[in-house]
Image (cartoon, rainbow, N blue to C red; front, side, top):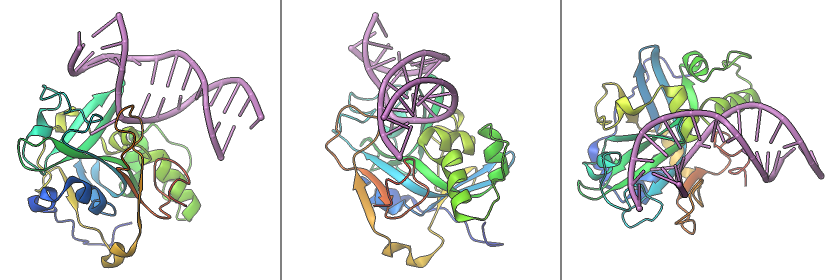
Length: 220
DNA sequence: ATCTCGATAGTCT
DNA sequence: GACTATCGAGATC
């Protein structure tokens, strides 16, 4: 749970102007915040992937289209797209306008709004508020353990594509809650679900994190 | 625990 | 007409 009155101020646009790989690492432990119709939804970002200019796995690799237009725009905006006929994925646009780079959010630890998240995921059995670590981890996986699940739990779709995440309006990113977070070791592994650019270790997680999309993968 | 497969529709060739 | 930055069910070990 969130402490009462905990600050959820958005990260500034400069944050997204760092190198994209740096942003992808720095986003770990940051908070994803959605002021949804059903209330405030908050999650701790636990898994990211970087997509850069000249990267064959990037949607922007073959140039600008209607779908990927936001990637070519200014940093600090959300690129949210629809795929596989049923899922949405959310990215944060990095780099200056004209340079199409972004960071995919692949998983998060649900912190606030677990009931509405579970409802949106179509999960009604069990108790998502269970405080036991194992139960919390199971629910984290079920609710936000994957880019499609995360978007479904948070109620994110294409209507939010292009939204500015540097203002605390509807959707934004806030800094990590605990100052000592920098001590955690970042693991770099191959990106998931792509067929080109598989040699790049541009998927990032924190060692020991229980809330990633693939169970046990960060428990190395 | 790990795998294979089908669903489903938007995007691009 | 092929492909997809995914997910869940069902089979198998």
